[in-house]
Length: 434
Image (cartoon, rainbow, N blue to C red):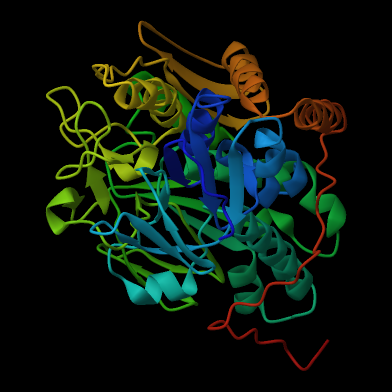
């Protein structure tokens, strides 16, 4: 990997997400050599990816170059690569571009979409965990409408403008609300020769309420907001299969749709090579102690979504969200310095700062530790928190200006098919009579 030798302890970080970047910032100019590995050369602000998928923001406004983050840090190196395996016996990371030894290894690889073993759903549905996937969704949505204006087959047309989102968590709720606002204010102007009233947005949730990780008050408010926007919510319904045309469920419900966006679950993006006892099998997360040390190892740590720090309060580990990742990264930066200096490390204590979700214009829900609210004020709180959390002044400014423009004009100018997307398993049937 062409990393220079050093007398300083080498810390290798796998992953430039919230946890990896938080740790990198904490190790700035410390007496360590840090090598950050990631398969992308940018940090992705995942909470706003749904706005990229629906044309509200361009991809560049929620991404920030990793090299720019660390360019003024001493003894810091970045390498663009995909890590394939960890050789724990020889203390090496094996990647596509070569091998690299480590003194301390930090795994912050985040999460990936969980299809619960259903390969056909995985093959035919859309995921939204990366910026390229968000751009694929944006292209497919717009391509569907372009195809819908070409066909006189009513069944085919309805299938093209029928959208099904599986999973009633924050991503599914926010994406449903954004699609509903597109239907209300934008698509009818873009496609006057289509009956946009026939467009359906279906949100399927396997549980008895959406946003089930938030308070019941937030769930009720979010459901009302979505229903008022015209989203159809199907609770206690589990999708059993999707063949690219038809969704089957555990009930009598069947959906004919060309687009299924799967937000029903996530699992850890595990790296091969760790002791099997260190891995939570179904969740694909890595068991760690209160110092984020991986079970069975003293020199390997895991942070964020990939880490399962089980306790009485969090029996299945912390929620796979940004705040636990950031807080763990911050503390581990201090703990690594303590460990190198043979000092006692501090145990991690999660400080719950609350959770929130936006449903659309002037509509959001916010859960704080001792207070729950929704509506316009919650929407402004949501905007402020997300704007403040973005990396880089330019990104903050661009996103803010986009939001102001979209609010005033009730428009989304990112409705561009820059990179056409074609589902491999989906064949579009265009009537010969055009």
